[in-house]
Image (cartoon, rainbow, N blue to C red; front, side, top):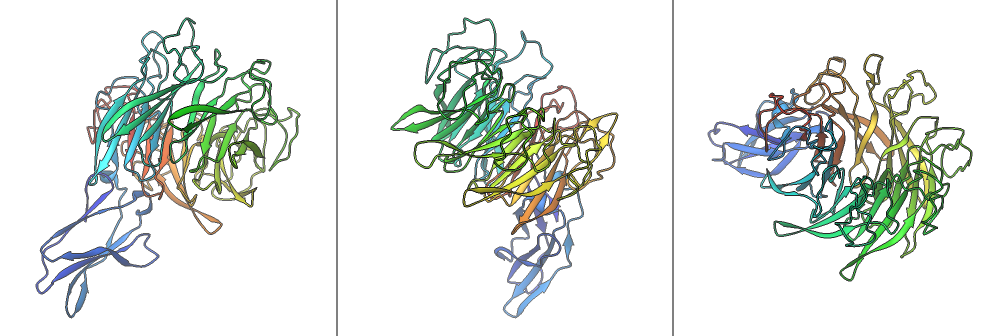
Length: 560
C-alpha cells in the first residue's frame, strides 16, 4: 500500500497463480471488522486506488483477497501506521502573492466536488496597497482537483475584503460572497455600484455568482435596505441548499430596534448588529426580512456568524459580545452582568414570516467567553455547534468540568445543542483532549471555526492558537514549538454520545500558519477542507512545493 495524491490509497500486488479475481477488505478503524470495498477486481489489474476520508482512516486495516471458484485466500493485514502526509491535498491559488490570505474563508458543496476559497488580501498590508480580494473555485473530477475560475467583484476596489465570507449551494452552482468593507452607499438589489462618494469603508456588499456548465457569472449585487457606514454588511453569509434563500450578517449595524422588521432608521445602539434575509422568487431577489435580536444591546455584534438549514427555513445567528447574565435556553436577563458572554439566536420561517424561536446561552456562560465566535447548523436543523473561544476551563475531552476557569485565557470550548419538537437542549460540552494554556503563547482558541456534516454526526473544530509542531494526522500533540500553527479536532456522534476522533495538522506545519482559520465538511463528512491563510509558501496551484516560504501570508488550503 502507498499513499497517492489527494485522499487516495494505492494498493499494488503481483498476480497470484490460480486467482480469477481479487477483493479488497477494509477495517476502517481497526476495531469494527472487515468488509469488502467496492466490487470484485479483475485478476489482471495489479493495482487498485481507493479514495478515503483521511480523518477517519488513521487506524485502518486492509486485506487483499485472491479468489477463484473454490474460495479466497487472504494477504497479510496491511495497517495504516502513518500520519498520511502524502495523501493530504495542498492547494494554492494560481497566482499566489504575498498577503493574499488565501484560505481566509472556504466553502465546500454538499457533494464535496466544488470548493470555493476566499483570498480577501487583508493581512499585514497597508490600505493603499490592499488588493480588492479574489475567490477561487476548484472542482474535483475523476478524483482530480483543478482550479476552475477566479472571481472578483464587478466594482472591485482595494480594501473591500471581497471573499471574507463565502457560502455555496448544495450543488455548488450558486455562490454568495461577502465584502464587508465595500464602500458604496447604495441600497437594495443591483443599486449603483459606483456610488463610492464616502472616503471611508464599511458599508459592505454581497455578490451572488452562478455557474452554467463551467462558466461563472455575477448574477446580482446586494445591499441592505438601510445601508450605512461601518455596518459591515456581508461580514457573514449563508445560502440555503437550493441557493434561493440568503442570510447576510451586518455585525456593525446600529439600530436599537428588536425582533423582525423593526425600525431600521434608529442608530442608537452602536454595533448591535442585524441580519438580512433575501429570497429568490420568479427570477428576482428581494429582501424578505430585517432581523434583530429579541434583546438588542449595543456592541453585541448580532450577525457576526449566520448559518441556514438546508431548506432555508431555520436560521442560527450569533452575537458573541452579547452581555446578559442568562444561562441555558430562553432564560432572558436584560442586565449586562456578563460582558461579552455571548449568545446564539434561532429563527424559523414556517411559511414567509420569520419569528425568533430560541435564545441560547452556554450552560456555564461567563463574561468574556465569546459564545458564538463560530456557529454551524446541521442541514436538517436538528444539531447546532457553537464555538466559544474565550471560555477558560482547563477541562479536557468531552463533558468535563465546566466550572473550572483556571486557564485565564482563551483555551476555548464548543457546545452541541439538539432540537426536539422545537425545543433546544445542550447535548454536549467539548474541549480539546490536549487543552493547554502556554503562558508565553496564549490560549489554543479552540472553537474558532466549526463545521458539521449534513446529519450533524461529524464535527470538525478549529483551534487557531494551538502550538504543536506535529504534521499530518494524530501526530505528537505535546511538541509546542510552532506557535499559532493551529489544529483541527474531529468528533463523532453515535446516537447521543460524542467521541473523540482524529487530531489534524497541516502537512507542512509552521508557526503563525493559522491552520484552522476556516473549515468545511462535505455533507457526508467524508471530505474535510481546512484553510491556513498565514501559510507562507510561494508555490502555486495544486500539490506545489510546500517548503519554500517566499510568500508571507499567501495562504494555503488542505484537503483530507
